[in-house]
Length: 191
Length: 98
Ligand SMILES: [Zn+2]
Image (cartoon, rainbow over all chains, first blue to last red):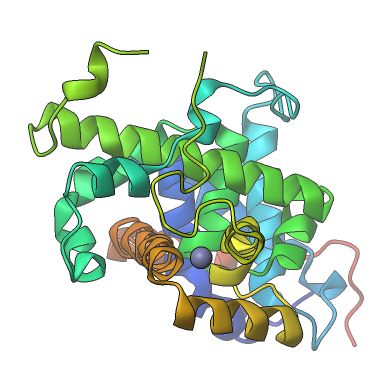
């Protein structure tokens, strides 16, 4: 049986990361809290199988991923990888640039262009598999190889989910900007 | 008919091979996934090509925006609940005391 103090000392630093991800996956706090608690209990019970010197944070995220899948068995686990939609080619950068929404120091302004609520809502609107890839890459900063191991998919799948997830995220963000009147909607009539 | 946003039709460098090669690696570049040689090649291109540089910086910043706005802190109550659950848990049933 894993020593409780050791386990807690080793894993507690990752609780905020796991909770942030769980929150964006579950979209409500109660489910997210349950998911993180379940992740910790599963991790504690199998801590003996964790190999010292390997990536503990990635190991915990893999457990969280599996716990999440278990909780939603009825949902399909994998998206249709081949399925493309028009959002997959969207470029927020070009839309904003073409509307002159990007100033000379556009990089600094982007942070203020979208509210926290908008970014969170855009992320939560993504299909779960795409959302997870974006969260692991952008929020948690995992390498593609680590994401592949966490999600148990090939690296090519990670890259395609990231690509599609990011493009859809950009489209969602652009729609928020348009709805707020921040950017002209001159092109809505065209095709 | 859908129009692709993925190229730079309005840019002076549109269609040039270095731009296309750079844009093809946009995500792998901002994600830090490239080998040193490819990364250096693209960095060199970005030094010379402001439209590409602007696009790369935009995507890099967008990553930062998503990261910063999606973080949440752990409620004290949850932390306490998890620690209590671990304390009360018998642990790994298969493990043998060492
Ligand atoms: Zn270029």
